Image (cartoon, rainbow, N blue to C red; front, side, top):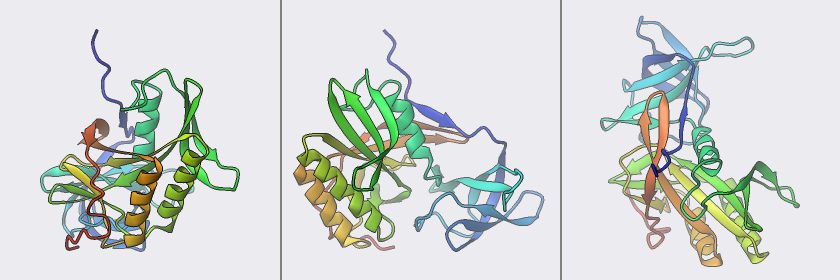
Length: 249
């Protein structure tokens, strides 16, 4: 029997090549279009985008002009070290949703009942809850775009929200459920994932504590071929460097 193809998503809007100039605040970037025009585009990523903000770098936009939009384009991909990176933080959730509704994930084989955007009793929210054989699996998905020396690093900025998610997942394990924090590396050059303790040591320590509490950590790599993104495989998660990883930024 032929194994299922890896889950993939596509951006259907027309692709437009451009060159990155600078970022303004979090959600705007100035770019040069092929015809020489300079314009502002939407950045679908609130993170620092470490390693993805070099002036003059090749990027790919989608033409998304619709009534009510402030910008006619959205930045989707950039070229780093000869490979493509997806900067869109909505893509990992779409990929995980496709996997859960299709071939599944390591440790989560079908059949699965999937619900997205799950509200918790005390007011928190997680990305998915999956029911399998009467057991509930709560899932939070994180996007990674920062890779140095083959190591995928998260977070690229201090994230109190990320720490809260880990605490919520650990609490769910204590209640008898299963819980997962899934990291989707939106590029192909990572061989290992590690917490960026030099950026947010509190998150790095919280990740260690969550793993010790029974939260499952899963890091997945992707194949980026604009306009398509596909899940590729798993890489190890290294927690022994939590709080002490000192790559320069």
